[in-house]
Amino acid sequence: SKDDGEALGELMYFPLWAKGLQLALIAEASGLPWTGAVPGDTEGGWKAVKATGVAPFDQLPILTTPSGLVLAQSIAIANYIGKKGNMLGSTDEEFGLGQMLMAEGEDIYTMLQKQELARWKKPEVRASTAESRVQCYAEAVPKHLTFLEKLITARGDGGNFTSSGETAGELYLFGMLLQLRTAAEPSAGDVFACAPKVKAWFEKLESHVAVRKVLDGQSAMGAHFGEATGAPYFLNDAAYEKFNAPK
Image (tube, rainbow, N blue to C red; front, side):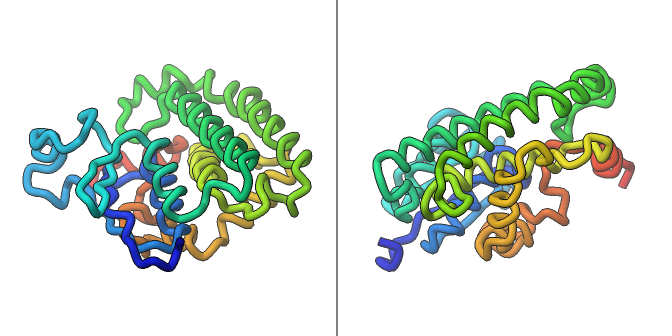
């Protein structure tokens, strides 16, 4: 239960959103205590952390549970936190639906990766997908959102995908959609224009107290995941230029 005082453990990820944001959102919304860490907090950074062999697949995120078990893989961690926080849906059907939303979130992430929008990409690599990016936001993004709109419309749960509206699956999807919106060029307009119910659900979660805590840099991940501190991983052109400008 949420009030048994048992901590989730320590979530470690790089100081950017990508695959870590969703897990911080779920952890914060669980109401259970947790701690956050980035490899830069450790001497030698990620290289040193990796050398210890602590990460099961030599990658982040990892969640070290109170018993010392180290979990890797974003979906596994999301489900672990979701189970501990009773956030996997109130029925077996809601559980299945939440898993579907997580998988959709992963598909959206893969789609964004293919557009070479990561903040560390070289300008010429980024430029090579300029045309593809326009097409992605004009065609692929509306397609994904139209599918989600049909799904939310069929549910009848007060404008949510599930009865609570804040299952681990919904928060996972929200985090990926936030990254999708953040990376959009202003010329793409409102990315949610084709999906008003999804937009309403998204905006409701965006103002959720736990979500705000993470995005305002006040969660256990601190300013590392704050919207205002350059945490976004996928950047539109203006944000990319600003991030990569000589300091």
